[in-house]
Image (cartoon, rainbow, N blue to C red):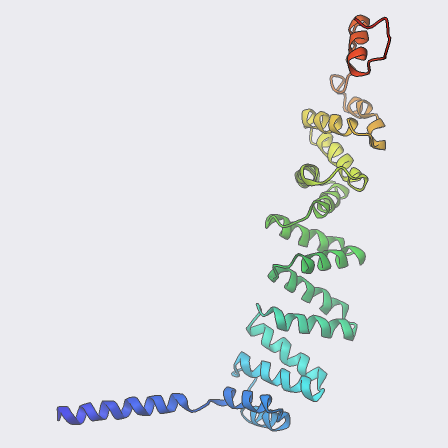
Length: 272
């Protein structure tokens, strides 16, 4: 009896292995696709295909077959159905993005760009989305996406400046100051960044952070850019703060000594 059970177990085991080695539907279709038997593969797939019960792989195979046969609409439907079940597939999302772009479906194109940018580690995908939203004037959506990426800490200085300016224009001064502070600390001193820096200064005035506003104003005034001549003191006076940005009065004797140290003149008898 024990020997019989032993042989029965081995028999069942071999049956199981043998069953596992028989290629399933997905594998058969994959072979047919590889052999470019697209019509045959499509016929076999559709014979047992049920949209509610089929696997993501079957949707993907139908999409590939449709693409090879030139059935563009069917390819797109299968890709959309597949991505509902496998939303993290960047390769398929890029195919969907291309379809929407070529079809002129702007709304579908933008939504796919959003999905790609949030999944991808490539800065170019994020830049493409943000540039598209800004160019098209979709400022609320741009603000939402900028805020999402700012929370992840991946925005470039220029994008931080853009986020701060959108908050500033919307009179959300606390948010503007927070975003523009990061921009101020990370952006270069190139002239293109000065509007954002000036907005940073004004946002600080609006929230009553006058000490930090003075620090920013002094850093701007120390440069040789046109913004250095901006009348910062008058801005403080508009808020009734006379104590900021006062010009220090230097005694005449000390002024002469400082002038000799900073810009000594050869043969100047007045210098000590």
